[in-house]
Length: 219
Image (cartoon, rainbow, N blue to C red; front, top):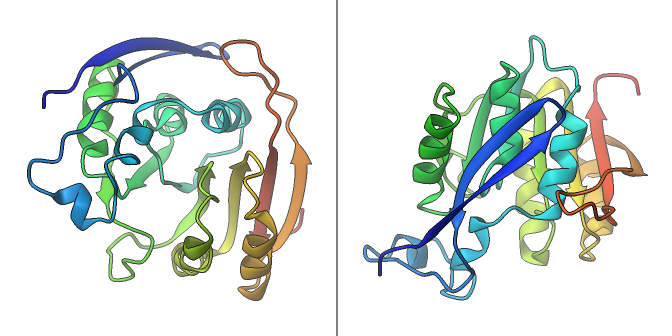
């Protein structure tokens, strides 16, 4: 099945980002069974292909966030609005997602915005033998939704966060925040949370929370 697309522009501060997205959530294409092998069901397959409110909220926070000299990773990037924004800002940004077609969208959208390619890793959080190295800032939006993935994600972050690091998660309150906080605290991270006062492209106020985890540094 050939995929159908739509294009949408997002205004983040002074940055206008154009993205090619899936046209709707009825898409599916897995000819080589890469998604099936990664544990992605047909129902879940198209979920990467839209911009979720948490991604827009995180992008707004990253608009003027200090990134100079930091190595940055976006985990579970999906359509990677945050990565594209940081790429426009000149960040040392790497994107990562388990979905097998995310890399193609990432590359085409970087080209669409006349930007340099964004380094990408197609892997799961359970793939501990990667060559990613360490990061100073790790970002994620709407990634706390599967109870079975919470400890795996915390361990992945622990393995790839530098000694002095930050982790910023935008969470729409899907009920997994508490166990994730516990898993991160067990790995030496402190946490502060707050309601973000940002809106999405429709002008709707974001109803979730932003969590900043940190270690080896003060608030």
